[in-house]
Image (cartoon, rainbow, N blue to C red):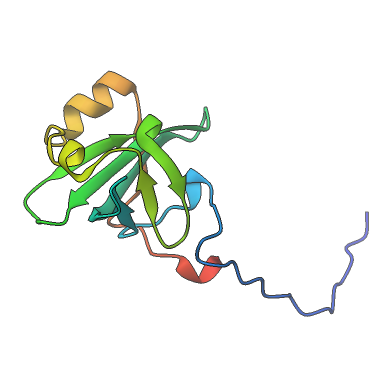
Length: 125
């Protein structure tokens, strides 16, 4: 089979900030907003299973900077390139237990899909 040469330029597609995205497209430091419209923190890690295409949730660094919590996938109501919205109130999120990497990974057989060390790829919207 002969290779085909394509001389056409690539078309850049701009995705509006509010356009819904897949869990695999969430990037580090995306703001997390509570159901009462408070910015409660930023995404620190996306937790899921690539093999099973299962989204488990997000490790969220709380805005106070003192700890991280896990917001489960069932509590995420929307994801866009500019924010992740949850069904939890600020008080609900602040009441979540401190994230424990070993306990969470062992219990749910999940792995980090994208974390703090991963490059931010906002240019690929």
